[in-house]
Amino acid sequence: MTTDDTTKPERTGPEVSLDLDHLEREGARTPFTFQHLGKRYMMSDPQEVDWQRLMIAMKDPVYFMSLVLPSDDREEFFNADLPTWKLNRLMEAYTKHYGLPVPGEAQGSPA
Image (cartoon, rainbow, N blue to C red):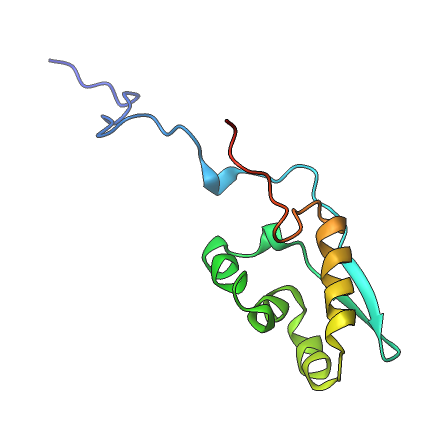
């Protein structure tokens, strides 16, 4: 019996179908920026947020804003008064910028 040092170790399971560790995102979008009370803010792409946090944030607007705003802007943003109608316009523009469905207007399942 001869030993070949170039043999590959035995695989213990099936081939990997998708290697997320080496996956690169294609077509990333530019950050969404807005101005409020003279300060410029930048909101990141929601697709860059951890999926579990994003699912929770979809039901909690304050948490959502904390995920998409840079940490050094959060305190100032949350301490500034912002009428609800302006927040609604902000979220409409944000969802349009990233090509997201507007809440209540998501496509239904195909028939």
